[in-house]
Image (tube, rainbow, N blue to C red; front, side):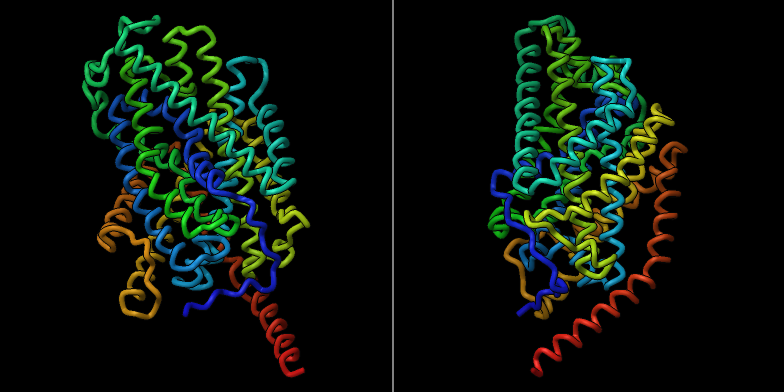
Length: 474
C-alpha cells in the first residue's frame, strides 16, 4: 500500500469542479494568447511551416501529459506534479517545482493581461495597454475570491466561447474555400499553403526560431494535474481529459491555422495583431472582425483566470501545506478558497501592469519568453519523476497505474531531447535570451531560500510529531 504524503493538518479544498468543468478547464488553459496573438508574429516569420512546429510541439506535450496522467492515477497528491517531484526527486525539488510553477503562471498571467490591452485597442486605440490590464486583473481577482464553483462556471463559459468560435471560424473558412464567397473568395485557395515561397518561405532556421512562442501557446495543458485536488471522480475524469488532447490540438491549433492560412496568404499577416481577427477582416463579413476580437479577448481573460490566478494561488497554498513556504499560506476560508494566496498572486501579477506602462511594445515578448523557460523546467520535472516512478513500479516497489505512458522510457528521452533543443533556440536570439537570465536569477533565489524553508519545515514537523506523540500516549 502506498502511503499518502502528510498535509500537515491543512484544511481540504471543496470538490466543486465537475466533469464538464474539468474538460473545459483543460481546454481553457491551453487555448490562449500564444495561439490567438503570438501566432501572428510567427506566421510573419515562418509562413505555413508554423503548422508543422505546432504539430511537433503538441506531440511532445501529449507525452508529457500521459506521463502526468500515469502519476495522477497511481496516487493523487495535492499540488499535482510538485508532490511527485517531492516524492521521487526529493524535498528540494518539490519546493523548487512549487515555486517555479507559481512564477511561471504569474508571468503568463502578465502576458494574458498584455494581450487583453492589445485587443481592446482595436476598438479604443486611445486606451493604453496598462489601463486595460489593470481593470481585467481586478475583475478576475474578485471572481477568484468568491468560490471555486463560480471560478469553474466562469471558466466553463469562457472555454465554450473559444471552442464555439474556433469551430465557427473553421466552418466559415471552409465555406470561403469551397464556395468562394466574401471579399477573400477570389484569393482563397489551398495552394496558399505553398504558393508564396513554399512551405518554408524563410528557410528552416526561421521555422525553428518559432518554437519558443509555440511552446508558450501550449502552456496550461498541465493544469489538469493542478485541478485533481478539486475534481469530482478524478480517476475517470483526468484520463478522459488527457486522452482528448490530440483531438483538441488537431482541431484548435492545426485545423484553425490550416484554414486561415489557406483563406489568407501568409504574407498578409504581421506581428502584434491577432491572425484570426485579421483573417476575418479580410473576409469582410460585417462585424466579423469585431466578433473574433471579442473571442480572443475572452481567450486571454480565460487563460489568465485558469492559470494566472487559479493555478498560482493553489501552488502557493501547496507551498504552505508542504512546508515550502510560510504555514499561513495554507489557510482556506469557509468557502474553500485560499484567499491570501489569491491576493499575493494578484499583487505580483500587477508587475505586468507596470511593464505594460513602461515598455508596451516589448512587454509581450519579454514575458512569454520567461514563461516558456520556466515551463520547460516544470515539464522536465514531470518526465523525470515519471521515469523514476515507472522504474520503481516495474521493480515491484510501487503499485502500477492502469493508465500507462506509451513507449516509456524511450518517449521520455525523446521529449527531453526536444526540450533541450528548444532551450537552445531561446538562447539564440537576444530578445528571448532574457528568459535564461531571468530563470538563472530565479534558480539562484530558489537555492538561497531552500535552507531557510528546510529549517522552518523541520521545526514545524518536530512540533507536530511531539504533539501527536503526547496525544497518543494520553
